Image (cartoon, rainbow over the protein chains, first blue to last red):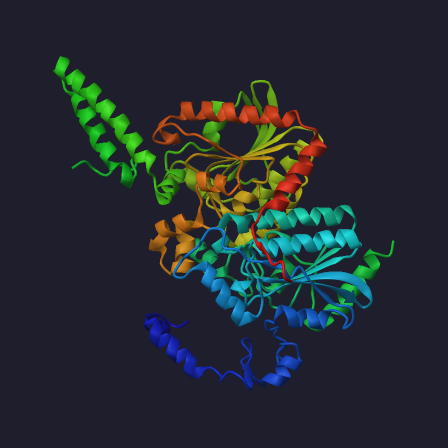
Length: 283
Length: 324
């Protein structure tokens, strides 16, 4: 943001932003290279910019749809629904915000779980839905993840999780924090049966999700240029009072610092993960 | 009007007035019968006023007590509580984080391994301890201690008091997330008893990273939250000044968390808070801690781990739709 933008009242800033954006619908403007792409072409390319390979966000359902074999899919734990235990209310009631978000996204909460096959190997896949409360982890996400891990133990299947999350769900307070313990504990069970857990970190994977299940993969795979970290860049900037280095908390930065194994394009996930799982489960 | 005294929080200013009167009378040179009786009356006043104030604390006031600049920290409890303590340093990989203290500890004849956050008291120590915000090397040092506890079959005791894990460039470069996640993973399956006590501020993942246990207790005026009230206020209310409202909404006090079954017990604090009487606080903590240690020691370790796992699995609340 330039200094001029900073002094403008937010109302003016917002209206200015609206004018310059590409009309919703027919066209998509890449947030990285600003290329304007025909939306149908962008979606056919699984939300990857054909010009710069920028991996745009993609819905959990669409991701699972590209990832799993077409046959024998079954959605899991659809009956687990969010509950406003604390009667939480900020500017609006959490309960109301939940229903409007459910209506808007068509999802019940921020994690979608499926049983299916990956190149004929039975697997369980969990996927965060970022458009649902920023993919934040509350009781439902924790429960569905934990049940998925359990089902893996019962069916002797590997677990794959695609994360896209801002962290813990504030509106569920300590219940959400404790989901970090719950998901990490569930992975212990999986490990004790020598079942692989592949964690795919996508843009963004932050806070409580990054600091629990997402960093606990036997193999950690990241999509290119994804923001991955514990604290958000703005918080860090405010704390240390200096500008963050170029590419900070991006996949490439994490790989350089030894935090992830592989950076892989979205279209390669099927083959890379299938190869790893075949090798890991042959004995 | 007396000068602002940081030892008394905003809501305790009436106590300060009484204390000033007591001091003036005590310092006067001609102490006769009537001054002495006045002083003892004022002291009674002080007591009853304290009790009155502390009966109706708001969640925000409790948060201020949890972060009180004079509140006893881990090192104070080590001094007042432990019979013996050998501090151990370093994560064997990168460095030694002064924001987390670890070691071999003893209370009377009970031996255990110890991990605790440490804040600093004066400006210099605050910087040295990084305001109690650990970096990955702190969590990795803690992890090493967990493994030592398991290897030598000693119970693990942790004291929690942190605003949160450090949000810094160096911490992220060394993978703060993984350091925390690894501890959660290890603690949920550690084959020795674990007791965790929140002694001040339980700040989010940075607290939980040493906070999984068979017994989780909170001191009466400590707090435990997924995000600081200020942080929550600035995100959800877009106004950091709404911290008091956020504190209420987040349900971060010991009594509320006990009601939700997210902690196991509350350790009462002396009248006016832990900082008013270190000795009384330490002895209350000692009784509770030794009782918990004695209790977990009697249990079969496999039963204990199974119980711990079931407890962790039960965290969370959701609706189940019977129709789908």
